[in-house]
Image (tube, rainbow, N blue to C red; front, top):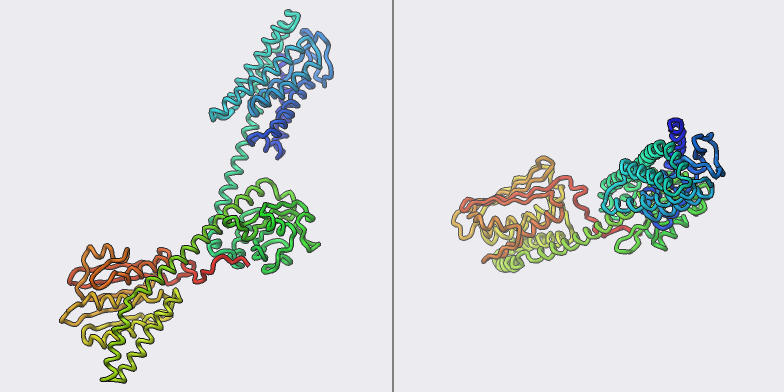
Length: 594
């Protein structure tokens, strides 16, 4: 018994070494890791059946109490038996692949063991098949319960089934005395040797799965990192600038040697290897890209011929081309190129496919955001059209009356009215205008109002120098002045005071309109700017309009606040970021795809 133990450990070592070498093969790792399709189950049956055959050939022949020399066994004496590690491979196959793999591998190894002969041939063949069935059953049950096949669990099953093999030998092998002597000699070395081998084999399997999980986690993190860094550019749509930035990010964060993005008509960006002849604004040149655009399916090439670049000296030898889709419409392609075919492995392929799905989603979100902005723009223009149309009629009546008493003043007011409505028309066509244009519009309005109501109020402008060219949304200052005049001083006998203060602070433009009028109640303050508020003189459209435009244009980075106390006036403050780059894009023409 003790002489057999080292030899059994040696045989266990052979199987474990083979398992370790196989674990370095990508195909073996994929078969072990995946949920097994019928083809993969066949591969597992052949694999673990082969383990069983190797164990038979490398087993130790035992003749009565004599242990044979380690050699490659092709046949045995009829009175001999075989000590080996056959059950170990069958048990692992059954645990990993389920009953089908266990039975298949057991049949292969069991039938082969029977052909070698010896007085335990039948009992060993039967026990091997039984081991496959039992291991497959317990492996399947374990998976159904959502539990892992741990090395400890595998060792218990392996040692138990090796023990069952000893019992079958005692029952089926003849003569019984020879069987009893054999079991006494080989039982402990085989039970514990196979237990140790099963444990080591399962540890290798666990390492494979752990490495695969770690690789997938890294791949997921990498995909999210790329998605996070490319999102701001995808929000701009597919254009030369955004695609170049996206391609550079991907080239930096992946193993690709070149990254390209095309529309359905032309190359928008190509960075990395071969950028000398893959030039933006040119038509897609590779047959692989044209195929992906036509079929709408992922195209993979592992040779220069499959890429079909028209430049014969192109150094690119492998590529994956992925269609970019929005609502099943192909907008373009994402391409990852490699100078060596081996670099385009399964990890890179899965990463590319995941990124293509993410990018397509980001493009769809960008399109939805564009549509939202267009809708918001339409709403804003509709609100602008509602701003006190009766102001025009009042002004025309005033000018008409002055024509008889003061023609020069009437002429001047007519020019001011023209300037005022010209400013309104510009505001309807533009999202941002210089501050000086808005102030011109306000002064034109005040000229008309002060003619109608002379000495009713005083306007004080406090404007910080050098802010005239700062861009602001049009028509946000005049409505506030109009509100102060009409709602701040109704039937007031004393002269009202309105102060307009504009200055910069902490990289923001501060616009403050303060008056000393009758003020606003707390209930009205809660609603103004959040919804249209109906009243005898109006419906609160102006303030709601301003608040909505600030939200739509600056994406929450601007603010509108209203403070007031009854009989103590009101203060309205608008805060706008001075550097609005990346906050608002005046070009809302949509995705650039040509």
